[in-house]
Image (cartoon, rainbow, N blue to C red; front, side, top):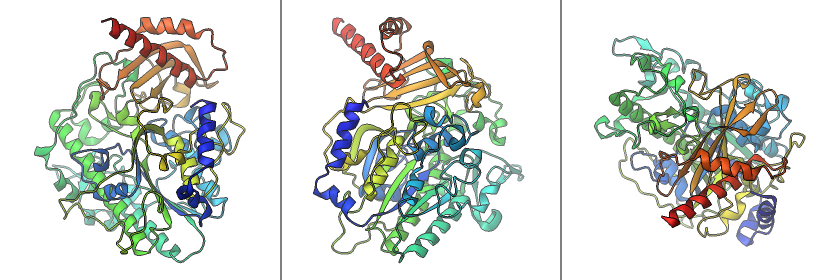
Length: 564
């Protein structure tokens, strides 16, 4: 958004009507912040007809649901760091897993750190920050957390040979439905994380100190090491392939991700799939999709355990719940698997806000808002979802929105260059959306995502190039009507993008092509636009340039279609 629009949004946020004003004047709310790993919008509350996600759907029925929320980079560490600092990857300068933002770019305040500095007890359970060097091998403790982050011990076995094959031996498979009692310790990571989070909630139930509890579930991230009973929810004969399982003819090679992490698993290696485009056999595609959905239902059950604990402890009326994911995951669309791209299936995420007193009112009869729903035993359930927003939002919007809706002041917007600013947001405070009914399309609502590549054609390291290997950066705009992507030359030593060095482009008209399979980008039309862009001052941001280009491109298409 431009500065004028940001100012207007900020002004609206500062002048709330009585219902939302009460949020900031009342006692501050606790926050339960739940992040799934690699979860696309395959949820009932997002219209998926196959998945069984009763607990998240129940949460959504009492929440505001953002139907078009997008990550800033479709891979774990860059996305999580961006969301939790409210800074875009070009500001965190984290495009891989190999640097810590406080050392590498700037000492940016994080979402949990902000709450901790304002008197909250902040705790992390499971995968919240990406572990390792990207969070200083400490999940950013002690900056972000009041106590060291908890990681489930059973995650140690996640990438080891734990899956029984047809030969009776153990393998490091992609598809790894297990008997939990036969696993080390008789448990799995997300079961352990839920136990820990439930224990923390119980220990805080009578405290006067507000809490910020972040719980990061590992599923549906691969490998699909999940309780085997969840496969029964998705009979293989009822599974279908992706609606667009082939690589689009006009997809630039630089845009394709060759899903190397999927290829590395023992059961996939046996299939001897050609690199980079070779399709996975259809029968294995069906099993892969079955396991992904089963992993979602398993994760949903853990969310249900958390929410029912809020009920049991009478915390639901005082605790704001946020549910989201770090990015999506391709399930065969465009002939791709995993994340690592700019398509909607990789960048679009669930974003759900439960704010007691705002998105729902206390039940006068005392009914529990979140009774646990077991998808394994209850086949039918129905939740109505009234509070939805269709306009585009971003994960960088989460920090200011959570802060404001919990009763704190939202960070101020960042300047165009903000490496020296410890606390500011490159997103928007979405508080105004909780008070006003959406009135159709907002042309100013735009999301920006990006993805790096080492070359113009798919390489072994295309999915996750190290910083020094990045040669091209794909910048992508998502609006209500379009997805527009430019693949531009990038210098990893200076972090500079060359706006005149266009390697490839993509333009999808979403009204006719919601799956983003028909690239209508034209080199000729773009060269005309680039000549018009030469008069712009060099200080104009890349985001502004791309928005102007999109306006020119689509205006020209509308004129041509009118002549036809």
